[in-house]
Length: 172
Image (tube, rainbow, N blue to C red; front, top):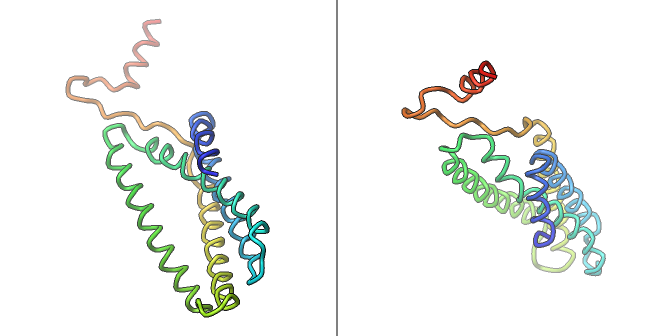
């Protein structure tokens, strides 16, 4: 799904802002994961899980494409490299903690000993993941509307942009 949806999400992010896409993407991921946890059983047919994978994949695409836009639009141009690096580091750290927490939940409730033991661990782990993503969706609702932070005035340009605009308005 990311191959198909991410380019559309990137274009939409530029047009409508990243916050609505982040909220929708995280909500769809939570729904997809919850769906997967609900249908998981040792005998479930793969085709039964495909819709959950599609919903979660669309949600992932709606999140990962605009998140960079949201992060970079919240800092000045001269800080974009730092913001991008921090965004990547936090994403990697989140993946590591997610694997550790969900792996711990899995191992506390199940094992690889049999199909039913596997599903016994998988189901609570996926529910925990769905809950975490749902909390993130709620938190994304609190993000401010996206705006570009103005660049820092350089020594060669001592007049701030806002003052220059006011002066131009007075001239007109």
